[in-house]
Length: 440
Ligand code: ADP
Image (cartoon, rainbow, N blue to C red; front, side, top):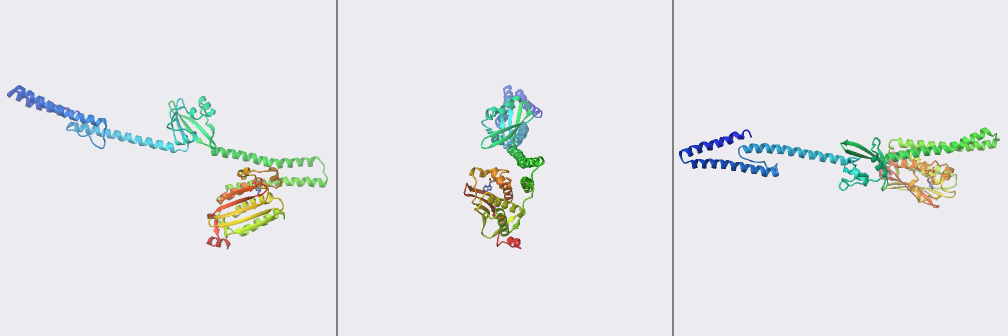
């Protein structure tokens, strides 16, 4: 503006200088007229530029620069560049905020921003899923009107957020959430929601496992301790003594089997992924048949069927343990006179090892839980058959490590069939080079 004033004055002086002699030497009205015309022109010029500015200020267009005349031009130029800078900063801020919001939405944890009355101000997509919120329609609603478990209402009412709240929500399945309430600004709360369902399940499984192991070992230990006490207190004759010692040996064998199976399970769990060595299925089937015959002691017919030529790739001891458990179960849960069939089928799509029996069968309701550790359909029968309740857990684990699926079908009184399906990547067809190398 400082550069503008002298020029405006200069222009007024110039008009004055022309108008004064004209008024003096010609007629005064001519001088006044010229002076007024000069001022009028200047006014029109200012008005024109001012209306340009006014038009532009209503909706500043940064792609078209603001043009003016004379001093107005430099004023417009500065205004234009300030506006451009300002709008540029605003656009950058908006981009930053959008990026921040996108990052909050992408988080694995739920985030809900609440006001001092725990009304929802914002929530990310994870929180929408976890708590069943709707970011748009629930905005401004009290959190406890939408998420209603009484423990959440009490937790927010108490106002002590030193420890997180563990919330169990039952929808399609039980979901366990850990809720943290954090003060992040004046009268504003941030609710962070972590899904701890998996950790909770693992914790529960670990607790159940420890309880199960303790229970499984306590029973034979109690029996053993009882017999020891009896032997110490009562003077038995040699025959009775040997009878009791036999029973004690039975219990210690049982404990040994449980510990052995637990060690097998733990070694499989901590072992690196199984190797890819070719396993000769012909000799493996032979070995399984011989073991089954030894366990059966002539009470069953053991049959081996083979379709297609090919071997498996994997860790032989683990496969022997998995298949051996299936075969042993078939023998143990099939009454004398029954048949146990071991079959090995190879096709271009993969291979399957199946053990079919004509035994007692399993009620359908038990099938989904059979591979859980220590799960038995009939505890007494399993114990009598020398089972530990870990055989199928070991088999499933070993098979999974070989990318195989275990399928169980059964009918009460008719028999059962346990099938391990291997993908083609685990099979070496008889005419492939790997099979030739494997058989050398
Ligand atoms: P166990 O050592 O008790 O046999 P497993 O884990 O091997 O433990 O098997 C779990 C349960 O599954 C067994 O207790 C038994 O009730 C049932 N089961 C397994 N295999 C068979 C089978 N072939 N026929 C009938 N029941 C079976």
